[in-house]
Length: 300
Image 1 (cartoon, rainbow, N blue to C red):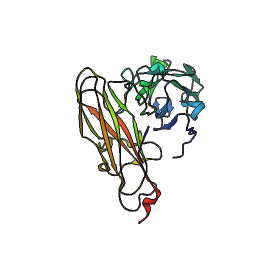
Image 2: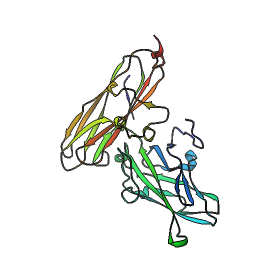
Image 3: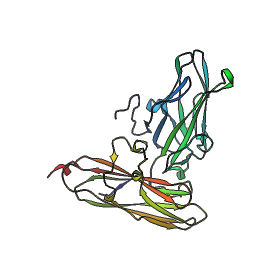
Image 4: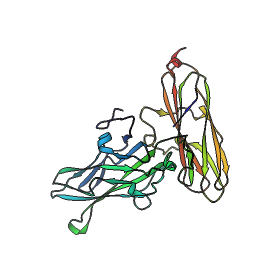
């Protein structure tokens, strides 16, 4: 994460030196089976560190067996292209084996619940900083009457630590360094600048369009926003090139200029923009742009 110059969480704890997890959706349901949460996001995953989500944050999957018989559920991890789907701006996790469960199956008695604990371990390689990935968690029961097996898929958004100090090219066909830009304590009308390096790791030239992800009417903002931030009220507060062309194996600077709003009523506000970077071919990526206003901006 780079600084631009100068809901309470039930059962979840924020440990600032570790990861941060937010549940994004309620339950997934199949006949006689419910799993919660249906989707969640994990921030600040550091490559090279082992993270046990339950021990670090209290998050676990709850598997509710609503049948009259005991059920056993197999637990697995997958790329979304193999099983599931993923949100705009995220790529598939390169290897689903970087995530796993403490136990590969769990059993729940009739009308009771069982729990599954997930761990994440990204390899200790600097290219895995500044990444946004999706992994699918599979919960699949053994076949019951009629040979039908109940199954649900849980989507997990994994965001590795943002760092502008990484000296290697980020992983993926589209790389962004850093993945988060933060402008703290802006005064009314203050202007600040920062930049992101865009890497084309493909073998062909690409043209990249930049836009706010929030302009799409069907975007679920809760899927993206960091806890404590609101969607930026006016995307025009952030100026940037609308388009960049980058040759194969090349890179380009994506400059950002933030103009803080004038007037009272903005003191202490925290806004976030999800700046989508979309190539002419292939998957898009995004940069988090976070703006924090100083308290004095409430003064008239």
